[in-house]
Image (cartoon, rainbow, N blue to C red; front, side):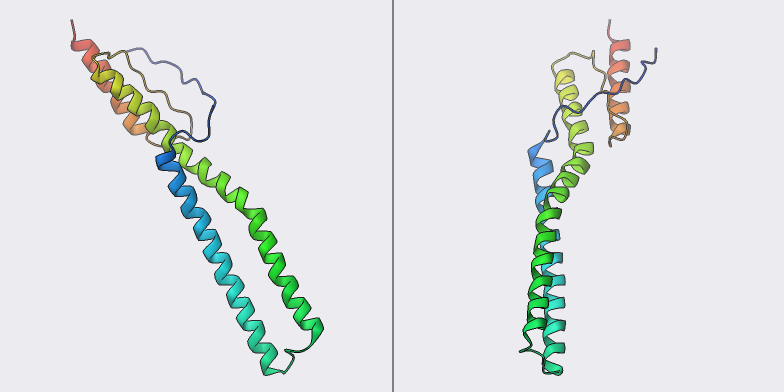
Length: 145
């Protein structure tokens, strides 16, 4: 068995398997929105209780400050949203990319073509599975006449 040097390949697409990646990204965005809403609600409630306790609810400066905090949190949400989406796609790409390659290799093997070698990028998940498939294909090639 000759070892082939690992040649890093570049990512050509970020979305390689929508069925895996998009639900994960949607869940991340939902968590970001829920956490933001919970934090905003807690701050709003705490400030409202404090204003009522000290009878400052009609102070224009305090109300303006509260509105400013609200809009700053909303702007932060809008600014963070693209980063959360990118992060979700990036994280899932380390699983979805290898799955696409492994599925293609198994489909090729199911057609009787055992000249398969699954190559994954550094940092990709499922390296153990890819190596098992490579060993299986090599064993079948070796046993075939």
